[in-house]
Image (tube, rainbow, N blue to C red):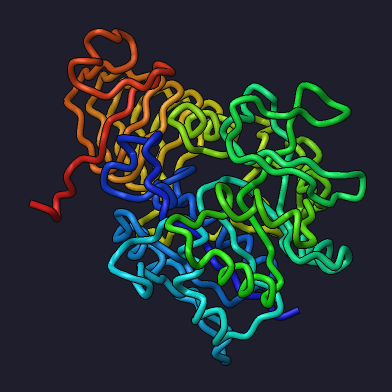
Length: 402
């Protein structure tokens, strides 16, 4: 089947503030050497889907530069590309009015490619997925639309589109972020949630887009999916049943996280650490393609490092780190004590500093003996404190920006 990817990368990510103060959610750095969008792009490439448009909107320059520098992808045919598409305003002088409107305004690009299937995926989740298995399911059910779904705890279900299905997997109900989510029929503690990833047969997508042409706001979760399941063959693909190459027995089976809040973003980093991480990034059979850092190897001098990730170019001198994620070109001077810290690239921590439960964005420099994470009242005077108690320090100023 000829498939094209439409990757929705326009999210504001307001709940990830201040990490999204100057960038969109898909552009937020993750796990020392990635951006959040790298996970969905890697899933498409590993699934051998090589024709992909990335639809951007809010604070998109950081994301555009990341894709330009790290995803230069072309082949010997015109069917191999990853192309960023800013809002085209083809239907009036307005930005995208929902995910459905974003696709509708770029329907010409899809039509020119003439696919059999259109894969419309979000760009702001951490997971590995073989999209070919979802496509096989879509074809076997002779579906018009297939929604990738996963079970979530009922107490968290208000954040998702909740799906009801019959025994065959056919969708018989859909509610976007309901106040009282309906639990799964045989498991009252869980609900069946949309992952925000959809497959549309191209002819059906084109027809649906025209049916919603008079709507002011067109969004797949809010408008389209709650109405089309009554008129089209809409099925739910159980993501939990996929078999992904290279997955280790100790990993959480079919790991998936919505990192839409500071707390969930922080916890997803902690999931990467330890002897048996819930998500092991070392999987050569399903690699996540990363940023190309031009720097030397990490250098660790007489330090105690426990359950941490250290990226290229970082220097750690006579310090103690526990459960930390350190990006590239970070310098940690002597006698520092860091625990449960996420430090993005090009930061410098002065000698004798103590930090815990902190996220530090790029280009920050701290004086010697800086203390963060131990005295909330003092931290609140200088930094942003998330309701979860995690201290977040916004992006600093690069030496090249003076």
